[in-house]
Image 1 (cartoon, rainbow, N blue to C red):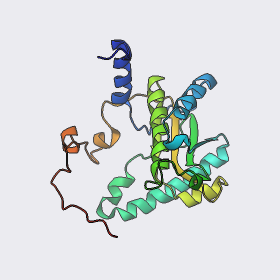
Image 2: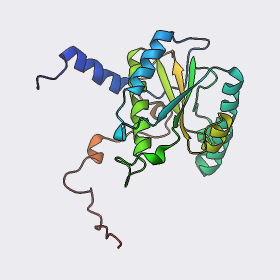
Image 3: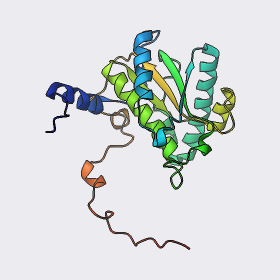
Image 4: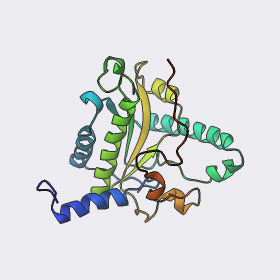
Length: 224
């Protein structure tokens, strides 16, 4: 234990938030999120690490009911396309509840900012680190929401071009997430997709190796 460690109770709270975080789809209708709590959640998201301190995230709060309904229609259109692409699992997919856009207390669209090409620090060979940075912000938001007793659902079933057009984003900005946020009836003990029988998480041991890749694939040859 280092002198910089949190107290046992504080450490337990951090790990509890990580373990009990869920991707929520069911929300309490007509609920609200207090303004001070919402401010804390957004500040937590904004405190995330980002490559080169570029802070590529943008949070668009959706307060217009008509815009919320249009976003829901875009998601539903893509839901049908996804079902078609899934082939023989299409009907099974359509039976899943994949979003809570019309029910959640707060709705956000999170996007990659415009002007990202000017940020080279940490992105010259890995330009996708801007997306990794936004993902860190979303994870902060998720964990803070769980600590506050709120549910959060990350919706990725949409056409980015259509959503960007709807929200009048610049050409080089890109939406990456629709975020449903608010009070929920309960937090399930297991991920919803496991409870629905869609898929099941695998143990950590399958994802950890030492010194080389599992299975030792042939070494890549760099083209010159």
